[in-house]
Every structure is written in C-alpha cells, then in structure tokens.
Length: 461
Ligand code: ARG
Image 1 (cartoon, protein in one colour):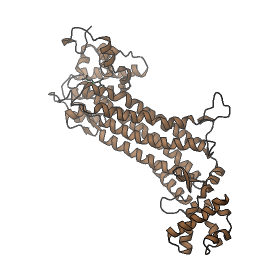
Image 2 (spheres, rainbow, N blue to C red):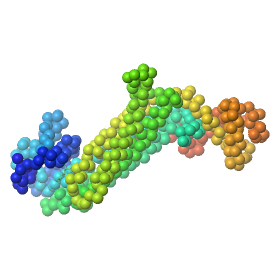
Image 3 (cartoon, protein in one colour):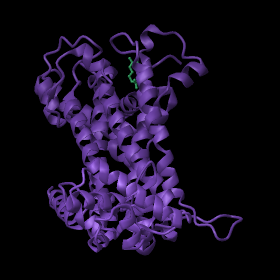
Image 4 (cartoon, helix red, strand yellow):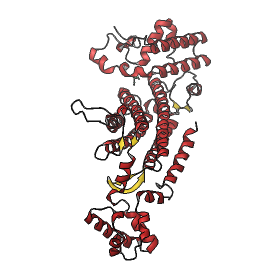
C-alpha cells in the first residue's frame, strides 16, 4: 500500500528496512501532548484568519482533545507505518473526523511542527528540572544549617589541607547548582521563540498569524527566519550542555559520598535506604546510588556530543539527520532528573560521623597554616619565614609521630624561641574554622549567614 500522506506520487510502500530506519514513533510518541497543543493553536489560528472554516476548526480541536485522552489513557495504537507522532495523530484525526482533518496541515509542515514540539518539550523539561534543582538546594541548605559547626577535613589534592565545616562543604554545591539553574534559565529564555508557521522552510503564502500561535503556546515571539526555524537544534545542544555541566557537579559530589562512606574514611553514613548489600560479602554496604550518579554523566555528555556530531556540517534546512536529535536528549534529560532525585534522597539521608570528621580534620597537621598565621600576627614574622618555621615544627612533630598540639612549648621554642603558650589557642580545629571569617570563609557563623541567605532566596517562588 502506498502512503496515505504522500501516496499521490508513490506506487508502492516502503521496504521493511526503509520503514525500520525511518520510523521515529518508537521514541517521539513522548511528544504527543506538545504536538496536540501545537496543532490546536494552529487550527484555531487558521480559523481566526479565515483560512479554514470555524466549524472545521472546532471539530479538529475536539478531535485532538479526544486523541489526547486516548493517549493519556493508554488507549491509542501507535503504528510504525505512520512513521512519527505527527502522522500518527493526524491519521487518527482523519479516522475520527473524515476529510475535515486534512485541513489541519494547511500552512505548516512536519518540519516546523517537530521544531515547535521539541521546543515545547525541552521548555517543559527545564521547568521540571528547575523545581528539582531547587529541592536539592533546599535539602543541602537545611543540612548545612544543622552542620554549620561540624568540623571536617578540607582537602586539596585529596590530601588533608585545612579544617572546614561540613555545612560549608555542602553550601559549595548549593552555589554550583545555583549557576546550573542559571544556565538552564538562559537556555530557556533563548529557546522561547515559536517556529510554527515557518512551514517546510520558506514560510507560506497563506495569511497566517504567527504571533497569535506563538502567544497561544506561551512563546515570547515567533522565530524571525523560516530557514533557521526548521534547522535550529542549538536549543537542544545548549540544554544538553547545561545538563552536562550540572551532571558533572552531581558526579563530583557523588564521588565524595563514595569516599566519605568508605570504611577507609568513615566520615559519612548512608542508611539502608540508599545502600545495597553484597550477594557474597555479608558485611558490605555499597553506595550504589552515589556510584550511579557519579557514572551517569557519561550518557548526558554523550548525548551532547552525539547531537553536536549530528548537526555538524548539516546544510540548511531540514534533513532527516535531525530526527536523531531526540533519543539522546530524552535519555539525557530524564537521566539528569533521576540523578537529582537520587542526590536529594542521599542528602536527606546522610549522617556525618562527627567524631571521625573532627579527628580526621585534626590529622595531617591541618592547622599548620593557623600556626604560620599566628607567627605572622603575633610575632610579626613575614609569612614566608613563618611558613619555614612552621615547616620545621611540623617536621619535628612528624618525626615523633604526634599531632602539632601534642608538642610541648619547649619543643616549639627550640625552633622559634619567641613562641608563647598562647599558640596552643589556634591549634585546635574548632578555633581554626572559627577564625575563617573572611567573606565566603568556612567559619560557622558565615555558614549560618549564607545558609539563611539561600533559604530566603529558595523560598521565593
Ligand atoms: N519525525 C521527523 C523528525 O523527527 C519529523 C519531521 C519530518 N520531516 C520531514 N521532512 N521528513 O525529524
């Protein structure tokens, strides 16, 4: 049987393999709600402009609503022979309405239709992700507030560097997620132009009102160039780039969760709800959720570079290559959503081992910088000299395998005779973090102030 939509020019139907490689209904059926919304706006505009009968437009809109509830209810049979979501819906409309259904496709093409559908889909998804990001930020800020004074080791090179607070560490991710949300917001603002009415590539001779359809679909304005309208997929790329960066942030946090829950550090506990056991080793509690969050960036960054390669070198305007824009993007965006949900779950679930954190914070001579700063502040040494003196004191302590504050005053005076007892006041990890009051520093009172600032901001709608 030749094709219902373009059978006029064709004598036979497609080869089975042609049909298999060509069909997108297996994945683009996800766009049904956006496709129906676009078609309804288009039909209403056509009637308002007198291009089709009002009565026909009303039938079309009612028919599309019927189809929407059929699909919602799982009562719709998608057919591969009909290629994609656009033709599946239109052909069902023809069954419901008869010839009037055929008027819907006046002054449009699947090229502007799919570009519109996909923009609507990406826009909706960005809005859902934003709410999820916000929830994750809230979870982090609430935990940070509880742990504004919980001391843990801060690392550089994954070596103990200086004591920080757990709350401060969590707020670092709140900042990153804030920028991630900004990137998605920017992408959303740029994509919010409506391609509908660009038709196949050149525009149309019908007196359509693109401003009306743009408005009806919540776009800021119609796109200004018909060729660009049907050729552009950079709105997807930009969204996937933002998704890749956000996933990278989540992956870094996940790696920290893996390290901190390892018995090697034992800094953090996850409950049974966010760990799994081993089928052979009864003692195991594996942080699988964190590991998967760490790993799943691969699919997201892969979708980004995959689509970049699809679009590279593609001459204007539409080519079927562009149908390859969807699967990766669908997968990447739902993967990111799952990553955020799992991370929020772990944040709410996690309990730091405050004693181990504090002990670890004090190990590895983590307050050596505090000692050097004291030498500068109290004895007036230039920092470079203070660094050298401190280095010798650390070497002395390391030689005896004791912590800095376990050295005696006499030991320290051997290196620098002017040191007084007062120095022991800065060697504890609690004093160290409390002294880091510079703006953005880790002092508990800074952390509380930043957490409160964030809470206020996150409570805004
Ligand atoms: N399924 C197609 C896609 O996703 C819809 C556009 C088809 N347009 C065309 N000229 N064949 O790209």
